[in-house]
Image 1 (spheres, rainbow, N blue to C red):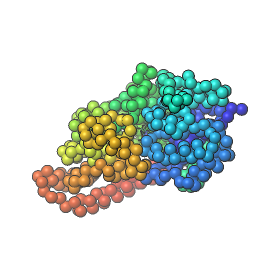
Image 2: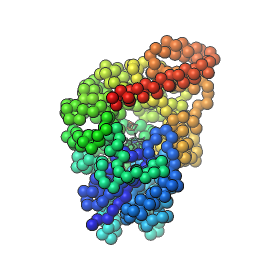
Image 3: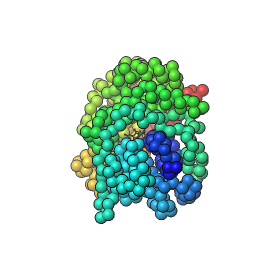
Image 4: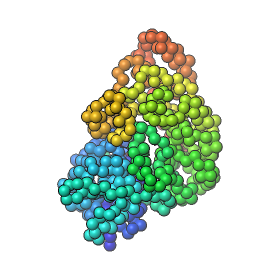
Length: 498
Ligand code: B12
Ligand code: SF4
């Protein structure tokens, strides 16, 4: 019988990457086990505890795998992965393989902790690697593989072409045997997905845009000349997966499409909206981009059951968007897209902004405020800070503009998990400490309430004329309306569940 392999995903019991890898390994005759280590917490994830590591050791002893694959998706919790990986190395004889976005972008650093690194899409490479190792063959010719040779030199094999026919990969595994979840100092057997109210999937891979703060651009560069980067599954495959998920998940209430940007391809949307409504019929959410919004697509999606759309705008300042974030959309295109979304009746719309980063002047905040006043209501705002992800173009911009030295930047991108999440949500760290900047952020936050617009305009013009604001009163207003936002969110969720 072919040997067992344990795949570990961190801070995300839904992780699609390991579920696709498990499917590929299963097809090749292996017995994949999946461990989801730690729950997903978008604001305050806790560190991997000693007793969670002990549970991991016990699990490894029980399964007795030869190979352990770690999915290293984000640099934000890289310290936790290193700690876990070192623990496995010190306490077992297993061969350690790292893969995922971080390992793809930083294979050499990853090899400090792993025996092998697989770059890019891993379905084909992991099967080839385990086949070779099991047969005692040197894996040196395997594409996507990165490994060390005797003089400690790191060899990076070329990546194989991108899988063009995504349907060929099948569906990400759910509800299979041999799935475990360690979180809150407990080990729970069984796939946590089966108990969830939501199912997550992607109908495509890749994104056509090139935002400077996003690792997607770096991934695309690695795959230059290796086939089309943005690829779509067939509608048939997506619907087939969702119908199966619906059968397995008795409590299923909502589907999240995790495509970086959801399709706007006319014939695809036409077929999808017809079949989704008929065969799946569960509300769903998508991520969108102002340049991918058109009346025809959004109407089709609403008709199919689109419940919530999150659209990245990131800044109302043309300068920040164009020159810092490398986002090509104009002010008019953003406003037009918000009108289309409103006209099509998307039930929940959320606009995403990254504020209070070191590139932002007060005028940029004023521009964001003005833009938010113009966006078609109703909408929610998701305001957060900027994470400098290692290797992204914005890191180079920050260094070349003298905002940070390379050493300071290193500290930022490899800061502790909590520090990084605080920078993302609390804007701390790079925070523009000026009282005025904070007031503008409060005004921006409040634009999601149309009834406040006359008051906000009055305060803004006083502010622009140099008048001092009663900041205590404003922060109280923000608190009150912040609570309203929270209650509205819970209420909407409750409505959906009912
Ligand atoms: C969906 C998504 C999410 C989802 C789910 C995250 C997840 N881990 O599954 C949600 C919304 C929860 C999310 C949250 C976050 N995300 Co996110 N997310 C994505 C997105 C758009 C797609 C990921 C996906 O599901 N792809 C489809 C699957 C099939 O592909 P895959 O996961 O890459 O897996 C393949 C390969 O990587 C490889 N592989 C993966 N694991 C392994 C393991 C082994 C052993 C091997 C051999 C191979 C291998 O093989 C897989 C199959 O081909 C990516 C963008 C991107 N292009 O990847 C960002 C991305 C991964 N996210 C990112 C970030 C920063 C985050 C957050 C930290 C944001 C925040 N500040 O809170 C959190 C972290 C959450 C978490 N615990 O991972 C960054 C990571 C970059 C970095 N350097 O850190 C990315 C790249 C986007 C970006 N901004 O650049 N995210
Ligand atoms: S649109 Fe989103 S996924 Fe695409 S490059 Fe920009 S931030 Fe990344």
